[in-house]
Image 1 (cartoon, one colour):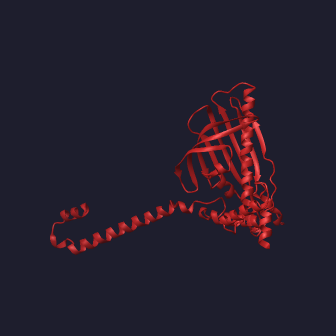
Image 2 (cartoon, helix red, strand yellow; image 1 turned 60 degrees about the vertical axis):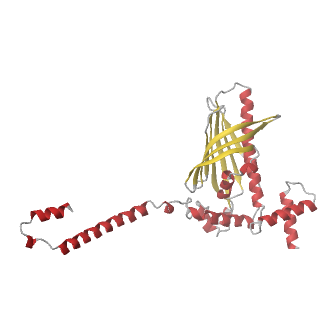
Image 3 (cartoon, one colour; image 1 turned 135 degrees about the horizontal axis):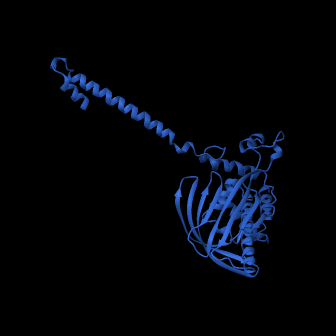
Length: 320
């Protein structure tokens, strides 16, 4: 606008100046061009920061399809549910100034997303028996596939004929994109450092279906097995425990034994829950399955933990 005014002042004769109509047309065109340039920049930046296009689950489809992928993977387990759990591998080291650095690893007969669901489930108190009560749980950050959660719970420990409870306050960083659950001590207490990481990695169980070569990726495995290959998980937990005051032996030995045993029970609980999920009939209504199981328990004197026998009986009754 200032340029237009200067233009008027610099002219010495009125007849040579542009008409009002010409000035309005120039202003219209300039405004139109400015808006077009601004709109192009906005669209370009919007495409650049479109986070929905960048959320990928490894080399799989976009993140929003993980539930569909999990259903397809569970169908493969429904077609072939044979799996034998192996004892977990546990290794304990003693860094200087710490009680222990503990690593436990086990193969689990469920896909990574199914195992991840168990680990991050707010109601997993029913799975892990060492959790006595969840006192509080607050989601601090929610970015879709990743959440930062503040958890305070009461945990049970047992070793030989001793037992007790401790209060645990941790910050949990759970990320479905790489299937990791990282936890770190929040409020300080009798523990100076308490941190660790759950990692869930894919395990290609039916590699023999890929007769030509050994698959090196998830996509390659699905292709060569024609979608029939089951995907399990390699689950590992690594945690560092360092109390504010490190007691001398033999007390430190007992505490180290308590920690190792508690961690081993955690993995055993996870394996038991995986077995329970594998025995579920994905094509039937859950409530109907529960009623059938209750009726079977009443009519037959089976132990409560004899899941395989109850499942076999139910299949026979359906065939009849």
